[in-house]
Amino acid sequence: MELHRCSLLALLLVVTCSVAVAYDPLDPKGNITIKWDVISWTPDGYVAMVTMSNYQMYRQILAPGWTVGWSWAKKEVIWSIVGAQATEQGDCSKFKGGIPHSCKRTPAIVDLLPGVPYNQQIANCCKAGVVSAYGQDPAGSVSAFQVSVGLAGTTNKTVKLPTNFTLAGPGPGYTCGPATIVPSTVYLTPDRRRRTQALMTWTVTCTYSQQLASRYPTCCVSFSSFYNSTIVPCARCACGCGHDGYRGNGCIMGDSKRALSAGVNTPRKDGAPLLQCTSHMCPIRVHWHVKLNYKDYWRAKIAITNFNYRMNYTQWTLVAQHPNLNNVTEVFSFQYKPLLPYGNINDTGMFYGLKFYNDLLMEAGPFGNVQSEVLMRKDYNTFTFSQGWAFPRKIYFNGDECKMPPPDSYPYLPNSAPIAPPRSVAAATSAILVVLLLVA
Image (tube, rainbow, N blue to C red; front, side, top):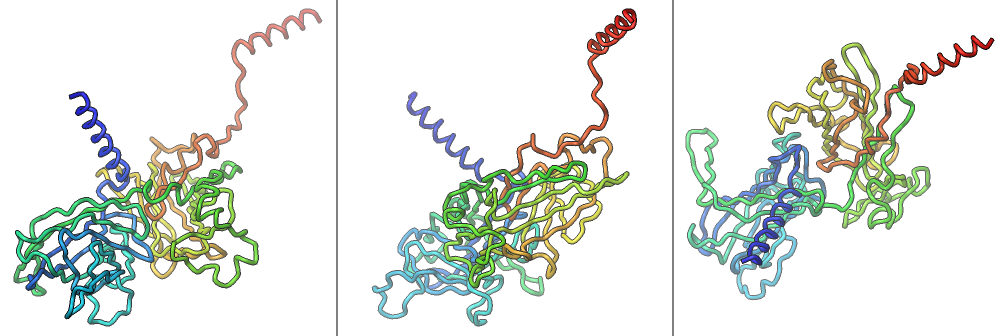
């Protein structure tokens, strides 16, 4: 009995820890939902519309894009796909007539590239697997493909749901739950006068964990202010030093000839970065500068610098948590959107680039940075420059939390007033002066 209790407790701890790791306090409802809608039956299976919806407010899927995988419950095959493709065909030698698109027991599906022929396209497909964050671009946060499945069930009772779903976006970090049957999706005809519905629907929910994606942070934060000449840099080795993909593959000095050589900006298939040599060895640095102080307002400057020669960031996002973001008056040269994960607590906001202006953060080099300023109105009940209040509590870049400097290193507010001596010292000094006067 005692052993049984210990086993249950261990299982509960594992489940609790796994859920907590994938929980983002600034986006508690963020996830990617993969929905399968069976839209017709075939002689040996079904045709399904598979829709991937990114409900994460500030985390997108960048190039080279997503890869979705699963395990078939029986001996199903994919006869055809529209809007995507399987990366491997597998062993289809038992088929004498038409050859399936994929006979793999565990297929891996990727999006098609833009510009494919129209007969291979479907709505919301063919974006090279790039999916926008929901909070930044709701229309671009959806990806879809249509799959024809054979050697499968042909009714709601005989269809066996796929298992062991995986999602790479594009690297690791996502964990997917089991497929769950839900009420069938309802569609409206273009004239919105008739409703139709899927024959069967199931969904899969995938959540992201930064700890699963990388052992080390992918960005760091530095601080400075107008009231103190100290510049607080990113912590040394904030993103790791000497591990694979960083100093292990070498780094480039910013003023070296190699930084200007041909091919230095060519991405590798494994996604390994090539960084500019810095003390922090982070691909991204976010600098927050407390710039100006007015009577009723104050201004901060935000600069994002890319130190990765092999990566540019399209439709990047920056999330900051600061108590004065509830009084943002104006943001210059960035878009801004408040995030309200907990209703009336307005201390978190998302910054992102203006389309066709600075929504592309270029590779490391002279153009590998974007910057803006934010003007905030003071709330005299809370506003202060002391004890680092003017600096953000958290910074996220592209959905990953950045390494902050240690709190005791923040630029301090200088105090020009002389320090008053203790009363006992002052009294002793007065007594000595009196004695000296009497002796004289």
